Image 1 (cartoon, helix red, strand yellow):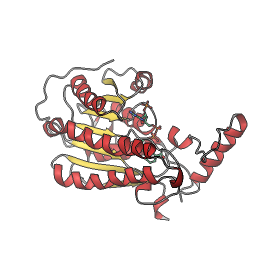
Image 2: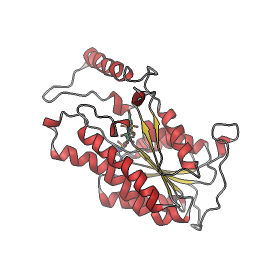
Image 3: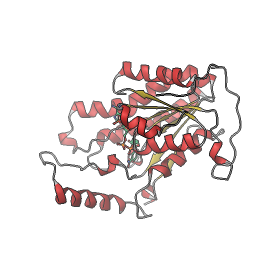
Length: 281
Ligand SMILES: NC(=O)c1ccc[n+]([C@@H]2O[C@H](COP(=O)([O-])OP(=O)(O)OC[C@H]3O[C@@H](n4cnc5c(N)ncnc54)[C@H](OP(=O)(O)O)[C@@H]3O)[C@@H](O)[C@H]2O)c1
């Protein structure tokens, strides 16, 4: 589906966004062309909704047409681009598809990610590579490919990192390493790519499908029925208790931080922690 076609890729006029969170905020992304990965659900989908509400044109990237179309909710300013971002050629096509669909590219929100909870002793090389590929390599290579367009446009990138980058937790060696790489690259690219701005939101635990996926021990089989429900609830309760604010975050709370960084014109290299106090303990 798509999308308005824009013909000009000339440097977009910089309209200073004002008043995040005040009454005139809703259209502050008017005319922006934004590629969002992980757009089919969770944090990425919340970013899509907030950007569309703010007047942006959005290319939604993910593997499944149906989930993306649902997230686009019939908006005439949404373009759906299907791609498996673990595949280098598909990543490149996704950026090209977004540029073609939107008529340029001002900004990237790179929220696609995968988390596999595995004790280190049982961590396979393929699971390690998968998490590094999708969580670290894919977003960085997409920035590289989009760079000429970002330089011609408003030039803003927001990664979605994780508090696990700086705070070790059992079973997350590969995931945490991938997010630590992303946090590091945020600062490094901010310095190297200016005036393109590069920032990152570092969430605590957010109530999404990723968080609700049952974390099985090696050799354990998936519970069913009431046992499964109890297991998920127990897992969520344990995760909630990590936060001084005593609840999980919502995708919308993370999206608000993403949009703040997207538009914050004198902020680059920033890692904005949004974690219900998790890392304050
Ligand atoms: N949930 C949390 O507690 C939490 C905390 C800190 C950071 N984060 C980070 O926030 C981001 C979003 O997480 P979430 O909680 O919203 O997760 P989610 O609900 O599981 O969504 C993950 C998204 O990534 C996409 N994706 C996964 N594999 C992909 C692939 N190979 N190619 C293209 N897209 C792929 C999925 O799209 P399809 O499956 O439709 O292709 C989906 O849209 C991730 O980077 C995650 O690491 C999450």
